[in-house]
Length: 172
Image (cartoon, rainbow, N blue to C red):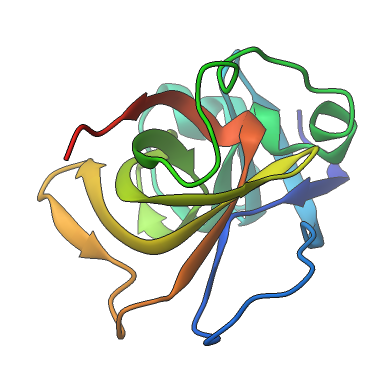
């Protein structure tokens, strides 16, 4: 596709508040050249002049600036998303969550989302997101494995349920 499109999506976010009140997912909008596969959406804000985005992706050329978001981050998907992945998980449980995160790219041949691993206490389950208290997160893909976020220890992680690949109880 070689025309400018508008994408509306949600993202996970960290909070550093002592006590968290009501939460909701924030909506974002990005405009750019869009290419979609089954699992990811690449939004290129700036690309090589005259080349269709599919040629840049197929030839593993750099996107000058852009985003890679999980297809399940689209507002239209999030608002209608249903799963039973949380059916055996209860609030207050210690959990480990594997999830896909949005990636900002600049001058990289990157076309897939990061895979994240988070441990924390499941504070609440909302209609479209979960809240983890005292989250410890590492990015497991792509390597190198590293802590996330880089600055300070957050008290909460608000994550869209649609981002979750797997969630399991931690027996401590």
